[in-house]
Image (cartoon, rainbow, N blue to C red; front, side, top):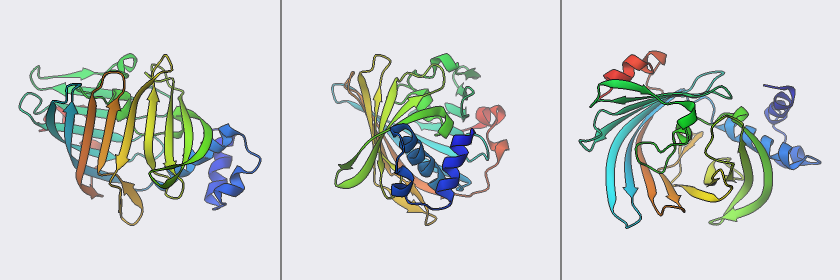
Length: 264
């Protein structure tokens, strides 16, 4: 982490108000400071698992449902590790996805396909591709890391009656499918409320909305629903999260390629 990042982190650690920090700062510095505070408030949860219902809707409105579970391990000094396992329907049952997130070096991702009985490495050049037919890209499955983006504060704006900061995120890693993202971040809670994704041509590609937030362990906000609408194809994907369990004792041995093959 460079000197400016450390300085920003120190300012926030000393609990100075955002208004104080923003004084005489550039839009880039303001955006970075908001991102640092957002990351800071979601640090220290250890590990978490959840059950998910995934609904895929095509442009004609037909819906197909999938069920899966996801486990995530927080890694000190690096990106998170996660393991997703599909249980239904039958044609995807046993499919498993393992992700090791990093800051600027390429994320490592693997997909286990039970029909082929083999593990497929996801190339970093293909990270913009769809995750198992959804409107979620492989790169969206990686954890948020400060160094992955440059930032630009745009404005303050209400969203559904809630005060938000609107910040541009510019990917700094290779092979992103996006030129930038625009995120609405809750002004008081520093949780994401909405994100617009712009494709490589700079056109609006899709919108992600978060809803049904609940607080866990008196600190960590988690949304019950993620909905991604693709404005170019008319398709959408909704994830309904339930049964959050924190600190169940997961360790790095639960996030290996062997664990990926054993996942059921």
